[in-house]
Length: 157
Image (cartoon, rainbow, N blue to C red; front, side):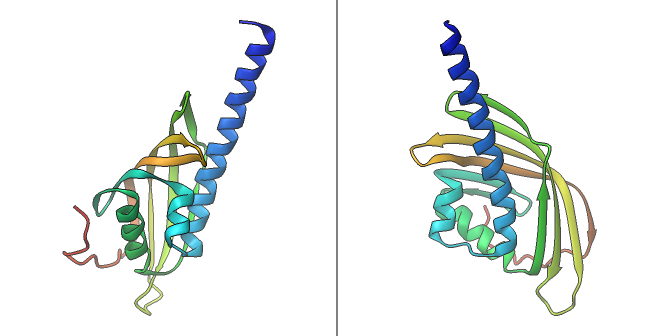
């Protein structure tokens, strides 16, 4: 491998890290904005994305977006924070392990605060449009406050 090849690989690795970190940061921030339309789904998820959430497992971008939209409707206001992502990049695939702290005010006019903290494991894939989430799992470690009521027919399987 030439010095130019080595430098090109290092530059690609650093660029991938920056793009993945940006995607994860923008995703968490977008949860607080609350616009969960088709364009939002295309910006963050691969077509065959799957999500393992506290309320169940979901397969396919449209189903993941619908589940997030439904879940986030249970809150009036939120703040989601993540950071310290440990990234493993292997060509066009990557894995991110990072903490997530989510604060929520329930949408039931009670001003009830619900906080959850856990570890997110995110798989990513490089697409022609950039890095996208292909799989995600949030493992809750602790909660504080009263969570929202999740209907039995929430659509999660």
